[in-house]
Image (cartoon, rainbow, N blue to C red; front, side, top):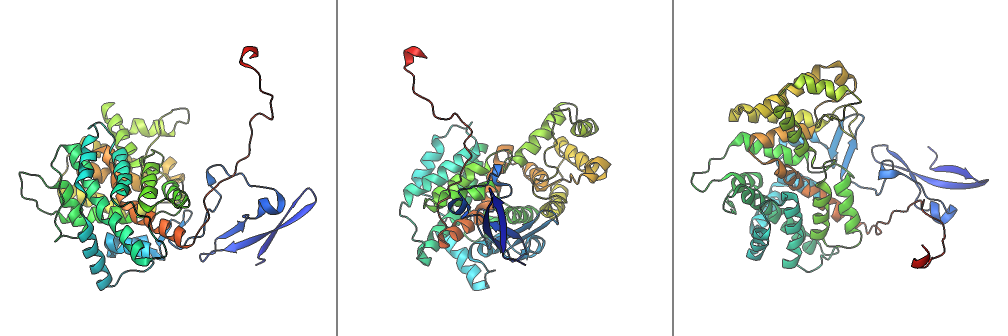
Length: 427
């Protein structure tokens, strides 16, 4: 294949390098187009623009493929635990048993929050959205560890990364418990990462805590499935903030804020809100399926189809099984979840949805699981953020190690041309 492409503009010829990725993706390298030809490209939303070269995650939306560092999401969700996947994403390889043990021990050693941060948490009104609180507390961690990370010092880099992996689950549990009016917990260092998260969240002060293996397994899968998803909005935010040499905590805080939006991490919350609206209107799923097919109706069916996956969401196939297991194990009797199952059944059988490949996605099933666990809808995106943490860290680390330049998109100006200033009396 020719490694050059040629464009002709105003009788001038310009050569553009062609870059081929390891999965045979082909890209035109336009990084010198402005300096060579005084031209830029316009791509609203960067839907067709590669902002970097990355070795972390491969995604093929047309074929429904998602791989972390070459490993299929199906195999990782079935065989690995979340901490193994976090190590894989951040450091490039699956850990040995010794490496995993060290990672786990180092996290437990750091899983303590400065008591002054508890004061900051308590200063938020109960009406504050959990994502806003988590973003603020994550940014607040900088105050208790203000030194910049030396990216050329592996030990310094490791320490900063481990601090985040250790402290964010505690903050997530604290945000959840404060929302529920429960005393704050630190969990149990004898437990694994996900098991400890479950205990920190669900332990009640007046009951003996009994670990539910089905719930832990579902949480483990959810965190793995959300751990990375290539250059999405929040990951791109982490990279572009980090490109200014902002610190790791500040960059992750920015990623949390980006994830908050309903078109991104807030989609699973939107699913439950939609189900609640259908329930309050009588619970007629057939009525709402007809509304979803009516292009003149403003109603949108949340949790079906995906912007990237044009066939099916490979994560949804995995988490559907976990959702069924959780509902069965907990014996949940909830009209909201009955509506969800009704919508799922109709969408999988309705020719309109099948022909358009509008299948339930990971947001649909994750919302069902979190609802079954009595996690408030406002907390869904917080759980998503915890899962996405290793991916954000991996991209921040990759971007800094590769010494990528500061992100600075261009624009095509469409405003007023030069105008003379007029005195206020003559306007």
